[in-house]
Image (cartoon, rainbow, N blue to C red; front, side, top):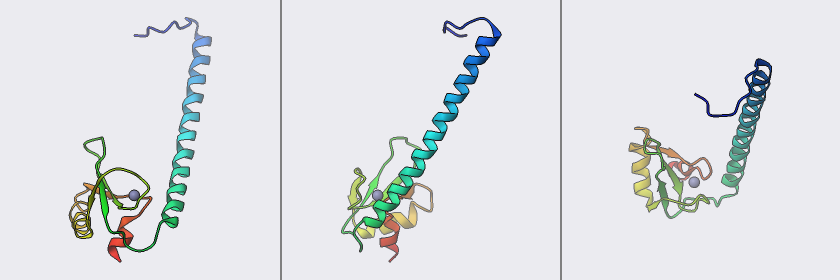
Length: 116
Ligand SMILES: [Zn+2]
């Protein structure tokens, strides 16, 4: 199965396997830390965003077809998506969120200005 030039003795194979496990654990830890950092920064950006309802909203479709689209405020710092007006955003909020086709951006929290 393997094309890698692996050693044939058990001891060195076990050492390599332990090292791989350590690298995997390290990568997972870094991934979790980056996730927490991203959420923290998103919250800070959301808190610093201008108050009051925006003039437009945006629906950003994801590259993975089965992933739900994201609804943003028009002034969200995350780029991408087509502009829609408040009424269209309210319709999307009612229909597409319920059906799981749309999620709210965690950075700009468009639902807060739509529910107001
Ligand atoms: Zn957003």
